[in-house]
Image 1 (cartoon, helix red, strand yellow):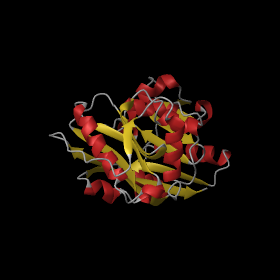
Image 2 (image 1 turned 180 degrees about the vertical axis):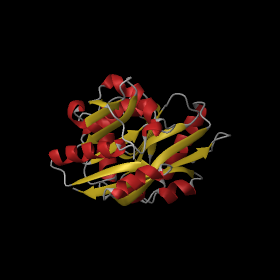
Image 3 (image 1 turned 180 degrees about the horizontal axis):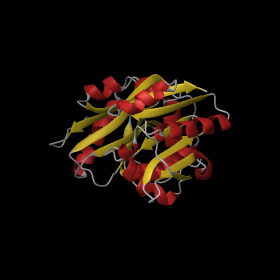
Image 4 (image 1 turned 45 degrees about the horizontal axis):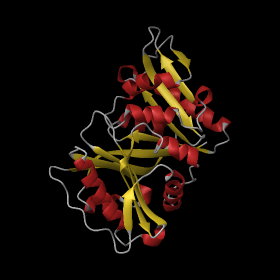
Length: 291
């Protein structure tokens, strides 16, 4: 294995978002997503991020760690097989240990088997799978009436705290921790691409019982659902199916001719989206290691 000499490292800054986005180079990872990750309140850029450059200033590697629990790392394709991935992995593990974490996880694209091999070679084990699902929308989809007794409206300013509480309650059984409001908001409703006009809330009287939150991503013909959650008391009443169909209609009328959403194996929602006609287009795996 030939190692890369003379690499320089430094923490990331918010101004590095575009360069990191180019390094990742995946169509399903938007510049907005990278910018949002860098701005997460819980990330200390000076402590939790690492950029690696060649002597001529080319960015060839990057890694970050969130709360000592989750990491991401990417290496430029032309610089793989030279030890840089292992170097970034060592940074993420040292960071997690310093944060007092006893376990670290990382997601990898299933189209990148070399990344999975690197993780397993360092003691990581496969724990979960995520899927990106897509539905083509050549014609405007029909939307059923809301479930009996429920009303719906678009997201409004000031809805954030109530929506956050519902989302975190809905996924509490599937996540190891609750996101606080500042962290959640930065990643969803405070993003530059958050689309309140494409996001729908369902109410039973004054009670919020379901939410669908969408992003309006540039340079794509697809709508993107960021969150879909239903209160546990209202599951099995077609609230989620209605919100999903409403999202399809809204993004079509907004000029998009398809809609996509990520879902996680822990939620058991893959079949729900497939029954709505969506098909898996990509998948990723979550690997975890005890530290």
